[in-house]
Image (cartoon, rainbow, N blue to C red; front, side, top):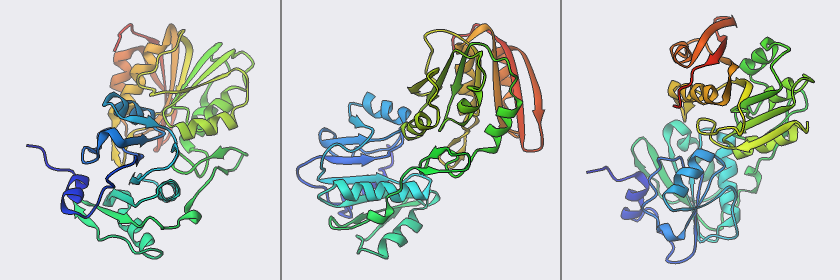
Length: 329
């Protein structure tokens, strides 16, 4: 028998009271989140993450990337980044006529968020369970100053709260950009393109005729569209581990993520490698930057005929993999 989720226990105990009618916004849930305590026919899942969007859509939920109209209540599933967590609470408060429910793990900063909320409103008594908390905010709560907007960092690039490397250029991506050769071929793919730094650097090469930017975070992709104005760029809101191009590429560049929440997950990077191999021509090349400790070489050797480290230090390694094998998965 499965253990009831924290949200289910909060509803059953009366810590959370659901409205009898009206839509309920569920903001930023991860794919595995249990929201079955809410009436599915009245739920709209709001997420900018394509894998999460697809997972809830497959379960029959109405899904959107931004709020659509007003809601009788809203559930905010706290993300890891505190500026984004605050922004999502402010967003929920703006579009909700009823209470805002906040659910988060201790590792995602729920204790800190609860303290911050208590400084301005009287929150409902929290329910503590499974290393986290659920609490509610009253309908009249005001969090306008918690809204965050796109910001400009060094180099004139636009980023947004919660996207990867929102505060500056990622050192690994910068290293990869400088290590790439002048000749990458005419058709290049940037898997996990983020807010577009690598793509912007690569498009300095006149030999490139097309660059596909593939990014699962809708907010990051929106920034990339601001940062990369070159007409050769094509933007795809997609799960990079599942996306397939309409024609195979000469090169794939990537700085793949290796975390799911706060937990290291090298399998995510391995899935990126498999996707890159499928997307490349038989003569194609993958260019990859990774933290030194990540064990990607074995996966690369399975997927490509030639693998070598072309640069690196104690922190990063730049790997080149040529001639993908014809595996389908």
